[in-house]
Length: 310
Length: 313
Image (tube, rainbow over all chains, first blue to last red; front, side, top):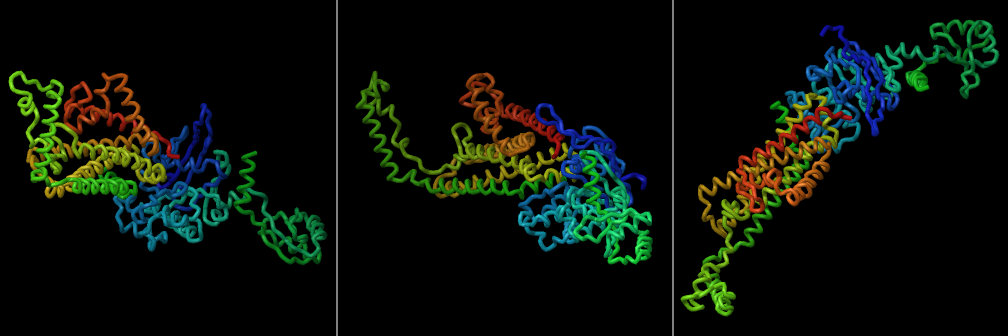
């Protein structure tokens, strides 16, 4: 595999589930996706039923696609997943481990499948913060601990690619730090999640899915720019006069509509905010506050998915 | 593949359902040992036993004479009726109630039921349940998803699990039946006899133990394969119950000629090493084994086909 070969490639993925009386449900409809090599954290966002889990299951060979190509490290997963599965660690939805076995035993049994010894198991348990509870039965673990154990199972093979489907508790502050570190170490972390705030902090790239189709993809900053135009928020004592002054100076401004009656939103890049202060100060309107109106991933996500759904 | 089988064997042995079944089996073995010991009496040749036998003999003799030779069954063309009855009624020793435990009751070589016949039936039922829950539990807990993300070659996974179920059940079958033998040994030594338990009997009993264990191992794989198809333990047990209690019963009643092909009948021939009293066909142990193996292979192939194609959602 050359270093330029994408870690994940999905081309024209379609998955239909047959229902009773010959009806079908389309879970994924012509999805294209590419995750480049070189490490980093990539997120896969979409509302419930968008097809995220189905895509992940297709990638891992758990579900057969109706059409399309899937490749991991350049290898067609429908033909030879076994040759690359050792380079992939995964959690699909809730980590499924035997509740009657201890955390250590669960990992040890998985490790034995590919000849991983107890030393590595203990390292991983330490890494995910379960060393002290390693010999307790999994059924006594909290949901968060089970998630961390699932994360440990995914990391056991020291994978180049981590595929995490809704790793809710992996996205607590410690989990974010761990995933970020894994991404910085040169591993690729591909995660689907609905926790948009955490994803924005964590991810380098994002793909947004709605109704089985990709509707946006790219670096987080680029995707954010697809939301509404950037702007700054200003607070002045006389908002009505400020609106007039700004309009005369050629700025587009409006009240924000928040409880604060003296707050305006000016459509201008934050880097050009100095011009606003100059114009308003020239009219002896002095600012109480000026800050960039940052658009967040959640807003973009809601805008894009509602467009997709329309 | 070997490591995968090893993992599956460990996983199978560590499962709560396996341990539960083993606990029930050990309890059952303890009950067998204790109940046989308690109900056996070392009184075969005591004076009291012989006196009771003499009394029983005399009562039967009197009945014979009093009923004119049991209503003419005992005829006396030459000797008197009394002499004829004395010849017809067995000697007093035959009336001794032998309450001793005979070690040879563990396995009746030629005819009659024996302890291992009964325990083998329970072994087969337990093995069927164990095999079914081995894969049914994986589907129930979703752990099959985790396993398949580690080893995506599904036929390999399926066969490794089947091999693990087969090996574990076979070995456990031998161990449990050996424990049955040990559990009745005190009764044989102190409340009975080991007469007849010679080398030939021991070979025959050992062969029976191996056949019963093989039958149990086959049942475990059968339960496993059916549960793989149904993705559910209860479904497999339901199918097994319906097959044995409905399908085989109907075939025996409506198509007696097909009885020779039934799993139950061939299983009985394989286990006992004898022809069935209730059937009019002849089978050797080898023929019965081949027929059972064909059933097993077919079910296993169907299970593997479904498992390989099933979507893990």
